[in-house]
Length: 188
Image 1 (cartoon, helix red, strand yellow):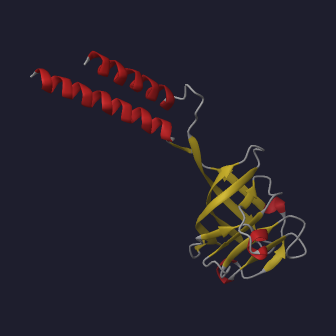
Image 2 (cartoon, rainbow, N blue to C red; image 1 turned 135 degrees about the horizontal axis):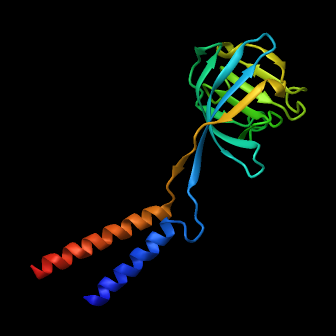
Image 3 (tube, one colour; image 1 turned 90 degrees about the vertical axis):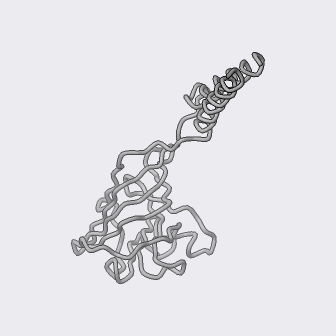
């Protein structure tokens, strides 16, 4: 029995070490951001987005747009988010924005066909011929030249998401508890 308890103790220590990051495993960061863009006529598109900041510290790969508004009026949900380039080429790509506003390649819409929503394309206008902001009826219903100085992206507080290693540590602690309970029951 002593051998079994020793094995459980070693497994628990290993699991706990993994969950505490001894092996340099850090939790993933699920980041939320507030964004806004001021159009030429003074109208404001704003909302929140979910994404991952890239190693350059400027670029964000976007996974979701939430609570979009136009001039303070809530617009429809925009569950379809992808790269503008990917949308027009038929090859899905990763939607991208940046803190500086210099890298913008995103389309967000209510349907996969790009119906009602908005897009930003800053890469020299490879799709529309110039860097552009384009939108459906709920978000200004217009097309204008994109101006990076009118874009604002600010990070909200990141929330740590546990990695599988921390779950392993919790399972190991549970196993020790179960073994202890089993040992107590066997003695009694």
